[in-house]
Image (cartoon, rainbow, N blue to C red; front, side):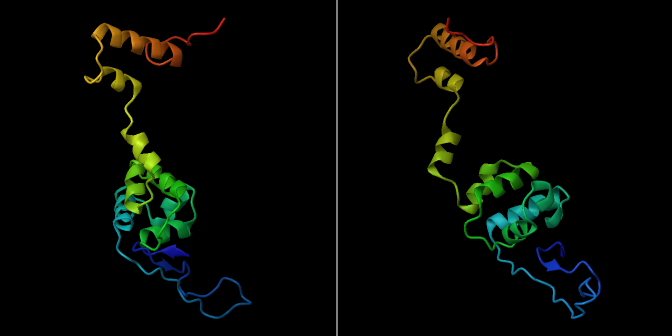
Length: 157
């Protein structure tokens, strides 16, 4: 099966018949009813921008073709988060965008996205520290994590 670019599945063979000689009845094309949804519209838009057919997007993301067809047709009420993240990575978009459009963002996701980095926290004007003390905290953090300016980290002796 292939797609016609509008999310509908069509036979790959022009006559619509099965390749197997024992089965000579006409195969009816399978269609996917399209329901407009922000997620479906965005997936189709991004696939087009990046030059993917829906089938090609599925292959590149490593998900089933039916997954992409159903998502792009707006036919999934609770899509799997891992599939959305794989698709978002192929389409070069922040996975949170697709997760939000699908309505599957958890409180943990929101917290992780809003949580500042250690450096942002320490440099926050709400923290009553001098600039020198802020730098000391950042240097200490980076020495432990091996971050910028840090070495391989402090070791217990």
